[in-house]
Length: 267
Image (cartoon, rainbow, N blue to C red):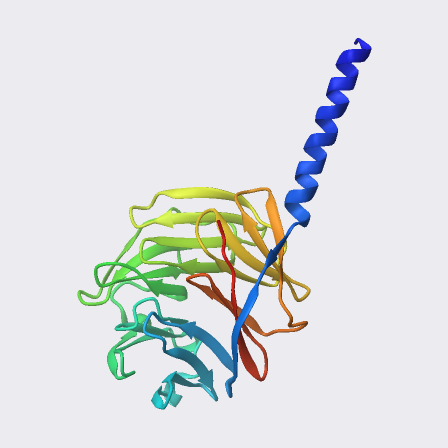
């Protein structure tokens, strides 16, 4: 190999290494826009109408200024999961009793679904709102992702059995996302098409933005991942936090005493 070719290869190698390093070490600036005190065990998030949702002593509440709505059901145990994608049909999941409760916008109970009483046996470990009066569910009995029509009380499987356990999941109306115990990231659409979205870094908490972007925390540091190879630290003031929530370019950090809101812009 000639000296000139070796020099060219060396320059290319240095350039690629620099590019990779910069992509992983660059930081995302977060602009502080507001903070307020909160008395809650868990912060759920905001809806498009400006209401915030939280849980305190297993009581689910919806708050905006002086408006407060509450729902509690002590007979069903602890609330495992809340889905507020559709603020007119809020999903509360009580995993210990295999029950889902749907609430209206004033937190009145619309429907209660006991999956243990279904004609076909269903044991739910993951759930979320989907389209056309349907719920996403993961049935642990057959390890399959399903769609459940809560008006017709019917369900259909949309995926093949999953071979690895689910470490984290998140849903939107059209997609069921999950990360398995080997940190492989997948999506399944309402037609059953499963797509591999790559492998993710080890994480403590996760928030999926899209099939290309996610925010995750590790050791109380926040990171934004874009595509497959660009990971940037998000600079926030909090050194410890219980949860974070992202919606419409607003990153909310939940600590034991307050909610801190930052504006971040992802390309």
